[in-house]
Image (cartoon, rainbow, N blue to C red; front, side):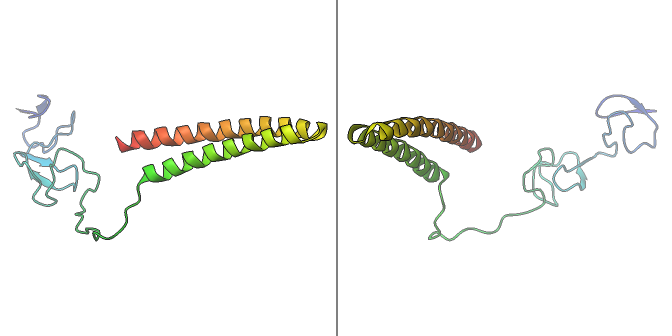
Length: 143
């Protein structure tokens, strides 16, 4: 009987795979990227060219396309920055509207201005929280 080269378990002499850990016993390993059997000492897979022990995101595919230098690449930070400015402008314009209505209006206009200000603060807070979550997610995704 022979022993498994990976876990040391006893195996039949004709065993190609270990029934306990699944390791190949013929001196080969399976590339995690393309699934082909290769020599266990190979640093790179001769079929896909990748490290056979580390899974690649684009398994089996080679990126040969390079974008032209004149093509605009959008930056998510620009979009997030513009969204944040939009939220702030909306909030401050509603406060300006409240001040004008409260100072120049009659009793009913002042009451309406108070209600609209409360509604605007609630909506701005909700939008601000959503915006903060989006920014936090984008920052985490960048790292």
